[in-house]
Image (cartoon, rainbow, N blue to C red; front, side):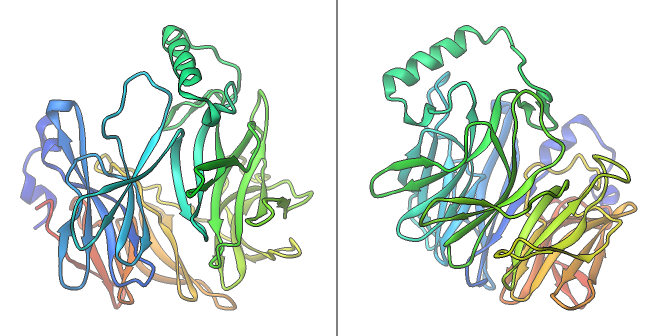
Length: 395
């Protein structure tokens, strides 16, 4: 049944009954994946988020505190997730991490970081790569003791009625105020609780990719004060020495998403000369040792999902590597296509769909969160260039 036939006329309360899907990720072996279901919570004027796990045998709920929307797989059977339990209002940001087995049981608190964490990646030897929001006015806030944190939080609260603008731009689409804020990288050593900044206070980190052996971190970003720059660079960080090297030199380019594919760094980038900020990226291969940048193929489509919709809530990665293939979502005209990229081969269009909002792999099969055939979000399996609907959460 199509959405209109199922739901009838659209009313204000119609959105209260939607189930939003997002943050879809496979476990390391591809034998299961997790995703988040979100629903409206009218009493709290917000949303409830819980993590679900899908295997070949079942699709089951893993968490139930209604606050779990961000997570990573630690291994095939364990998930590390964040939750805003027992948070004190008006305090400086902190993020609590809980560990839970997919076989059941309670989520157990593993550690807490004095940062607003946006991403976490597993490294070796009990280390984690942390991406977090940092304020250039307090670049060492992660090292403040409780007394100092309390003083700063009190000062921020007292000045909350006024907004001082120091930079251009000072607002980010979909994220609110970005003035004096940077996405910054840190190394966290769990045994010692040591937190080490890897990028400077004024450096804005954008895309991140960790090598398979966990020894190298690749990231794009730019250093700026007062006015953001139009161009950025690609960097390589050695996990052992903690030294960063700029891989792209002298190129005035806007580097976007990056993904490792069989030892090469696939880079979406453009020079902005033809259209400017909204120019679609071409696809390049970057040699991670020499820094040599080679055009793979030119492109006139956007390498992200730009299909407009009011029935999405959480994001999900729409660019993933499985085996020797990089799968990308591109937008063409009014719909999405799933593109398969393999080295030394022409790009292959795997399928066309209305809107592809996330992807994961389950036992060699691609599963997608998608909007298709005028329906709300559901999970589908890709089978011979067609979508097979697996869920009926919004019917």
